[in-house]
Amino acid sequence: MSKETDIFIKDRADPYVTIGDDGWYYFTASYPMYGKDDKEGYDRIILRRAKTIDGLKTAEEKVIWDEKESESSFRFIWAPELHTIGGKWYVLFAASGSENNVWDINCHIIMCNGKDPYNDSWTDLGKFQACDGDDFSFTNFSLDMTYFESGGVSYVAWAQNGGNSNVYIATVNPEKPWKTTCKAVLLTKPEYDWERVRIPVNEGPAAMKHNGKVYLAFSASATGPEYCIGLMYADENSDLTDINNWTKLEKSVLTSNDLVGEYGPGHNSFVKDEKGDWVFVYHSRDEKCFKGECGYSHHDSLYDPCRSARKRCVKWDENNFPILNA
Image 1 (cartoon, helix red, strand yellow):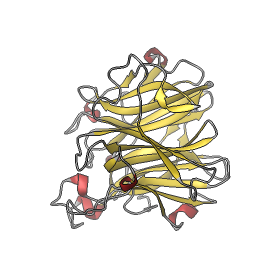
Image 2: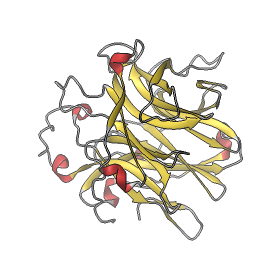
Image 3: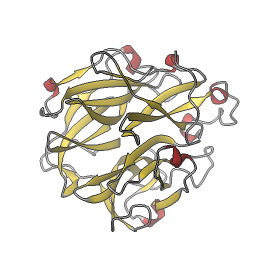
Image 4: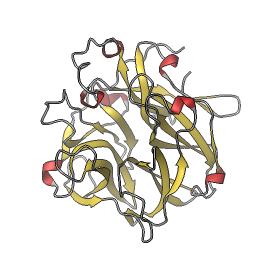
C-alpha cells in the first residue's frame, strides 16, 4: 500500500495537465458544484499555467470560456482537456446540449483564436461531429474525450453509452479535428468485476507513449470509493482502430486499496515532468469525505466538490511496463 499523496489542487476533478511547445505547463479540470443548489458550478472552463508542474498548484486560475458564451453548450461542463492539434490550441470537453439537462451530455470542442491559450480568445465549434455513415457517435450520452497521436496518425478516444459506458476510438484529421474520419470502434467495455461495481463503467481514457508502446488508462465503476484505473496497451505504430492490436489487463492498476487516506482514484492524465519522467495526475476523495464529514454527503455525488487533483510518478518494472500503484 502506498503512502498518502498530498492534494495537488483542491476541489478539481478530472484533472488534465499538458506541456505546450511554448514551454508552459497547463492545468485544467472540471469546475465543481458545491452542492445541488450551486448555480455556478460545472459552467466554465478554467486554466492555469506555470513553468513547472509543481508551480501549477499556486498559479493563477483563469476562466477562459463560459457556457453563457455559447449557443450550443450548456452546463454541465465536464472533463476539459487542452491539446495542440495541427498547430492550434483546442479544448475538448463534455457539455449538455440543452439547458439544465444532465442527460443530454456530449463531446464538444472550442478553438483558440491565437497562439496563447491562457490569454487569447476562443471560438466555440460546437458539438463534436461524426464522419459520414457513422450513426452512433455522439448521438447519445458521450463525454471524456482525449486526443493523441501515435504512429503518425491522429486519434480521439471517448466514453459513450453503448448499453454501458464504454470507451471508443476513431481517427481525426488534425487540420479539422472536430470531426472523426472513421466510424467509432469499441475499445473497452466493463467486463471484469472491478469495472462493474455499482455501475458498469469505462470512461476517462488517457494515453501515454513509452518505449514503442502506447498505453491507454481508463477509469472504471461508479465514482465513489470503488472508482479505479484500468490499463490497455498496443504497439505504437500499429492500427489502433483494430481492437486485435490491443491487450487489456485483467486487473486494475490503481484502486482505493492501494492508497492511504484517499478514495476512488481515477480520471487521470499523463505528462512528462521537467526531467522527462512520466507523471500521472488523477483525482480522489479524502478521508473526511469518505466518512461523510465533508458537509456534502447528503447530496448526490455529482454535486460533491470533494474530488481533488493529486499526482504521482509512473514507475517501471523490469520489463519496462508502467506501475501506477507503487
